[in-house]
Amino acid sequence: MRPSLLLRLVVVLAATVTSFARAAVAPAFDDSYEAQYMARMSMYGSELFHIRLKIPSGYTAGVVTTFYLISQPENGGHDEIDFEFLGDKAGRPVTLQTNLIIDGRSYREQRLRLWFDPAAAFHDYKILWNAYQLVMSVDDTPVRVLRNLTAAVPGYRFPSKPAMLIRGSIWDAWATDGGRANVDWSRAPFTAAFRGFNVDAACAVGDVTPPCYDDPAALWWNGGEYEALSDAQRAAYEGVRNNSMDYCTDELRFNSHVPLECSYN
Ligand SMILES: *[C@@H]1O[C@H](CO)[C@@H](O)[C@H](O)[C@H]1NC(C)=O
Ligand SMILES: *[C@@H]1O[C@H](CO)[C@@H](O)[C@H](O)[C@H]1NC(C)=O
Image (cartoon, rainbow, N blue to C red):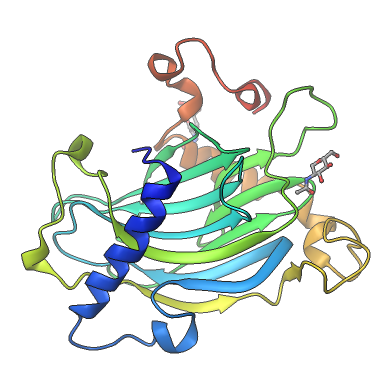
């Protein structure tokens, strides 16, 4: 599932308009966030983002719900940090795909079988992004971690564009059964609920000096316990990794060009 960026953005808008236009009850989503899809126009340079999310339930083949950060401008080698819930046929577990796009290169999709049904209730999803690490968590369990080793390892990639926008979306994609199961619009509306969006722990670019990756006294997510996983987090992460399809071990796909960070887990 790697549509071009342009196609993807068009699809985000189209799918969102369609699914909300068909919804009988307008969700509070549009009241709290920018129309159609959430895009706080503030840009952030480091943060601990937090959202509570409940994805559409039932038969959702081809429907993808997302919460993600994307650097600006969006063409010419952008960075992106994605939570993507891949819809499925009813009764089959939803897959949480995380993806990192760094300098416009997308080949880091990783799929995880969640230990709960993300359509049944709200759960917490967080993205910690600072100068030391990127940690994506589900209910405070790390599900994806990337250390920032760019200073020490030549050629290493870590999302380091100065400013990211935050988005949530619902869109139709080739995400189910290898793209064979498309959206069944007779089962619309597909409604995702976003709640508890928190930008308190975020450095809005331009609002502060010194820069966003510094000053842990004021920007607390830039230091202390946020510099590395604790022993408890590390143990939880190991348990999660046992249930995920790690892109680093997907040799078929990389044909021996395995990304550099895979040597530094
Ligand atoms: C990652 O580390 C490099 C090298 O120290 C630094 O230039 C970059 O700003 C860091 N990334 C972030 C997001 O702070
Ligand atoms: C993960 O799998 C490894 C290797 O099979 C095993 O040693 C370890 O105990 C597992 N960890 C958890 C938390 O399930």
